[in-house]
Length: 447
Image 1 (cartoon, one colour):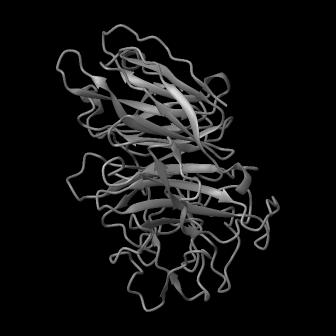
Image 2: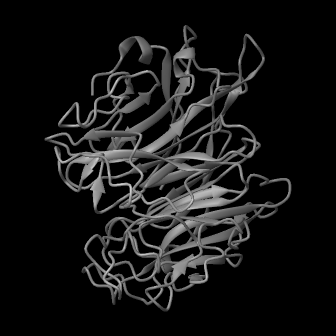
Image 3: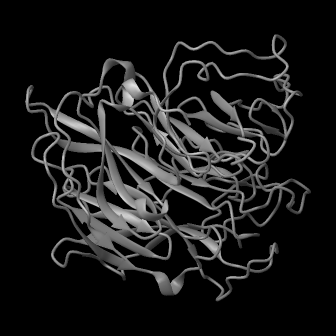
């Protein structure tokens, strides 16, 4: 990708911690702790990662606080994937939420088989402040998926909405063509958790306003990840029709109590897509595998809007695969309006492509073209997006505190991200520096 040099020159990219195979990060509300997941089953704690003043030096410390390697499968895309902390972590509780591939049946089989292999598990753990470790006996399991059909499409991002509920993305597990007992493919089947966004309370209960909470055919799928009958509906489901919603990001700029998020959906053969979710999208169907991008599956030109009777929700942004590198839209984050970043980032969204590389800034005001005016649809963000960085293999990002502004005395935020790109692997931050001096780089290793 071609970097916008004028924009990029105002930012500094600093290494925070070098961690093998990082997957995701979560920062505590007070900004003192950063939890980072490692694919193979290790949860790391990074401390002292922010300077006293923006642009100042850092001397971070990293240590392992939980090891679940021996109960996991990590072959293929299987991993300790997602992590989140409770919004009241450190005041009311010390809860940490994790999503990982659990070796439930002592079987890490890689073949595409619905009767073998592990499951994906979502659970809550407690950080012991006195011991400085996650209590290994504190796990409370909120749900398991059924056996994952293949070694890919696990997803597993976790985030709290402003409604106080916790949202979890679950991939289709490679089940695009696998059907339930009624002949419905996994991403569309309401009797199982594959290919869905899940919504729960912080205690793992079903929110009363979930779309199937009061349905007469509703069922708490919980520990099995599926209902006993194909005509039943899992009450945990908030939306369906997902392939590999590997990451999503909550919008911090909405009014109190209003939940909005963007889902980064890794595409199949042609399109990558970003879709809106949250309030007003309960029960939404994002169309996979019938649709990808703005088109019928794997088509570039059969891109009429979906029939109203199908009720599919189309993406807000989509882009074509690169002919050489393909594409994989992964990390994403809304820029907080109080981050102290330039005005060009107002109401913008940043996403990364793992395969093509690059940090792309989506800003409003672009002009797109869709059916019937254009045979191949063009996103309205395509003409207005800017490239902030060309980093590759970035899989997660989140804004977090980065010290106080030396001029205004106000708190500043930086964009923290995890990369799995060779010598660049680990946790980094992108900080707005403007004309400030570049800060020194930290180099902390956790293998």
